[in-house]
Image 1: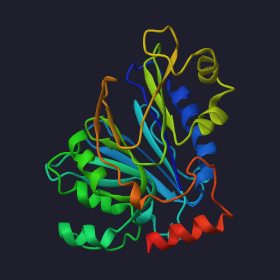
Image 2: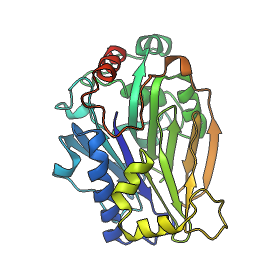
Image 3: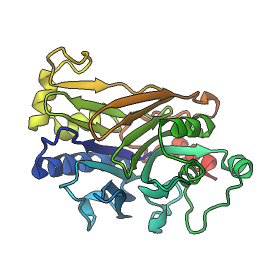
Length: 286
């Protein structure tokens, strides 16, 4: 279980100080879902993505993202194998499609049945990287492009429980959701998206800020045009969502395999001390 969080300022209305506030508050609360490592990614302004990550709680990290960028993708890692000391295992991962487009990928969940996928697609166990998540990077590397079509194919092939956030060098932000939740909001009036793993993380992090006041005063389930400042963007099991740098949204669907999902309450903040969840996660990861 890990924490995904971030924002996309397609309206260009967020000041650097506001972006830093979003990052710090969301990171601090998301950290309860994983204190083993933290990382972040953002567009580098030259068609690529910048990535920073290191072992340890994200609130104690030596790095800070670049808050002049209009997009940020964050991750707090909970390592079931306790291999976070090798920073290559930590998220976000750097990848590139066969057509050359670079991207960053972060994962919440755990993947199973990796050996059959590696055999079917001629993939080798990655040297120096021990985490299950990296097979998604390897499989996307076989695609000509990272887009909603290739991510839909990936979602239909993976087994286990998962949600992914993916940021490409063109400034597109993608979400790929299996059975692991993502809570995504659009601030309609100001023109930005903000997301966290769960609704309670968002509320705990930001309810006492100006963003929280807009949230309280909004009917977040209302359709756009209702007059609400903020709107919830629903992500169901089997959804792929692309948000472009201009805020345009496109969707696709894939068939999520429920038979290999992990019977775990992903809405809980923290699984520390849950012996059965720990056993099940380690068994599937091995």
